[in-house]
Length: 94
Image (cartoon, rainbow, N blue to C red):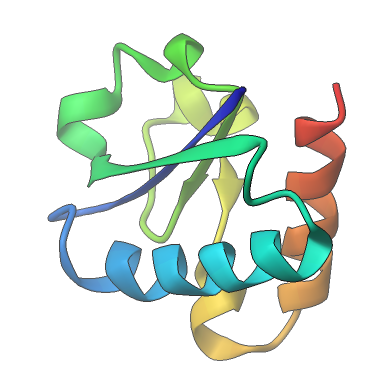
């Protein structure tokens, strides 16, 4: 089972919105039984990103983590959301 982390600054607000969108997308793609979802805040997860197969964030992350994180702001705005979902799917298929 793949592990996907959704994180934001507080681990509550925007990550909840994105979490719901990701859940719906996973179900539509038939991936909901293959992926465990986790939600948290950046400060708590910064040293544990390697524990997850996919990490998405709605807030800025430290520069040394940027290559491990998919920025999920487009899932909030709707502009470019398809590209984010493509990135998530590519990471899940690794």
